[in-house]
Every structure is written in structure tokens, then in C-alpha cells.
Length: 428
Image: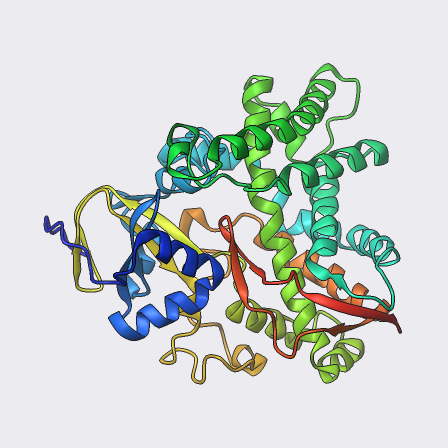
């Protein structure tokens, strides 16, 4: 990338921003792929209430995500535009030194060795959850994996060890995250740009209050010595000098942003195993530590990434993919386009786990991001998949109700199966 003061934006779809937003929400992956086929790997989308966004799937766009030049863009500033509950002091909304300080407080419980030590306990929790899943009638797999992922996070990462307290926090997390319109995609001061914006914000804040109260109690009880500190995120932030209010604000953002991607990943991996009995047989025979398991998971996430993209706001003029972009431009590095690039993945729409058995994945495959913004939950995701997927498939035979994996639709900042992955389960 090189400095260039030109303010011109790349070409892109010319439909009204409202129409572009509607098409994108209904089929984001299809919209991106169609735009790339027409305009190339760099193009501009325009959404009502958000403004123009340059979509890029090029090597220099990946440099932005990798923070190869930290003076070129800001991730926190961009994220605050689509995740308003992420303040400039939170891990997801901060930049620079502030981001590094917050990340240092939050990430120790995600240490690979620590989460690996929880695998047996996670397996037991998964086994308990699976016993409650419906048998012989359709249900939405995503709704079950959400509850499971939230439970594992609250107990083993957040560090709420008491069973009663953990259940209360899990229920409060679910109530808040399932608020219609969560997360609000415009800040409160721009609600007039979005129909029902004020009502959605008010309802989201109302549903957050019980969770805020429970987290405040958890922090206060640890600081006062009423309960052991433990070694989860709660312990690390409670030991800091931050106020209870700021700690809870940081925790709310982590809870809001960390749950859905893991639940979607678990859903998509289970769905792919369920569509091929031979994959389940191999898992029964070889276990989740075999390379084939990771290959299936990687291929599922290549085709169905939970995260839509990585967003950056340029802080100086740069050139991306041959297009001069000015400071202040929002750039979306779209994982779907990278993951379905035929130059990197031949026959990119075909499900072929063998792609990930012949060596390291290509550098454009970024299921957990890259650079200092790389998802700290990557070790947790690997352990959670190994603990839960074999447990579910050992107990149940899942039959998806769609002939092909459900198309992804946009829900806030993530991509979810259109009907939440409808399946029928029978006991094995």
C-alpha cells in the first residue's frame, strides 16, 4: 500500500442504499460474490444509515487486517459504528495502547493450556445439554448450540463456578442477546436513520439490566472476598483497579460479541458431519484428535464463516487493490470472498475437507482473523469443538431438513443459517 490522496471510491452496485441493504441482509454471501464477479475484488457497497463501504479481497487488504501498518487504519473506530455497545474503552471498540491494555486483562483465561484443561469438564456439560435436545421432531440446531456455547463460556471462561449463579447468568445472557435488533446497528444518536431504532435500543437496554446486575454482583463478591476469585475473566478484571461499572461494561461487550460466532461454528460443523455418515463413522473410529476432524471443521468454516468480515476505518490515504482510498473510508475485508477465491481454493463451492490435509492452510484463510486483532478465543474454539461435536454425534443421529446447508443470512454482524439449521434427531 502507498499513500494516495485521491478520494474516489471503486465502482459497485448502483441500486438504492435501502435496496442494497435488503439484498445484503437476505443473502450477504451471494451479494458479495455477485458483486465481485461484476466489479472485481474491490468494490463499493452503499447501505442506508451507514454510508459507503469499500469491500476488498486482496493481499493489501489483508495487510490492513493484519495491522501491518498500524498508522493506516483503525479497527475499534470501525467496530463502534456497527457495535455501538462497544465503547472506545472496550476490547472491541478500542484502538492502540488502550486496546492492548484491555486485551491483556481479558485474554489470560483463553490461554491454550488453560482451556485444554477444561476439555473433560466441557464434554460433561455438553453431554448434559444433549440429553435435553428434542427427539423425533424438528428443532433449530442453532438455538441449542447457542445455549450450550453460552453455558460453556460463562462457566469455563467467565469463571462463574456456582451452578445456580451460572444458570442465572446464562439465562440473562440469552435474554439480552436474543433481543430483537441486537446489536443495534446504529448508535443511539443516529437512531433516526433506522426504523424503530429508539424502541430497539430501549428494549436492548432493558434486557441488559438483569445481566448487568448479575455481573456487578460477581465482581463485587470477588473483590470483597465473599467468594473465591477463581481464574476466569471475572478474576482478572476484579483484580484490576478499574471501577465496577467499567468492568461490567467491558464484560458486556465480550459476552455480546463472543457467543454467537462460536454457536454458529458449532452448528455449521455439526451440520456438515450430519450430511455425511462416512464422516461420522471416521469420527467414531479416529476421534477428534485425528487430522480429519480439523479438516472437516476448517472446510465447514471456509464455506460458512460465522463472521461476515473484518472492518477498518482508514486513518490516512492508501491504495487497496489498485484503488486510491482516502482517510475516513470504511474498508470491509470480506472473508467469504477470500474463502471462495478459485485461485486459492479450486472449485470453491465444493465441500472438500481434503483441502486442509495436504499442508498448512493458505494465508488468506483467516477464520480467527490475523495480527493483534486475532480472536483471543481461537484456543477455546478448538477445544470446544473437540469437546462438543463428538459428544453430540455419539449420542444423536442428526438429519438436516434441507437438501443443502442453509443459506446464510445477516444477523447484526454475523452470518446465521437461514432457518437456524432445522434438524431432526434420533438416538444412536
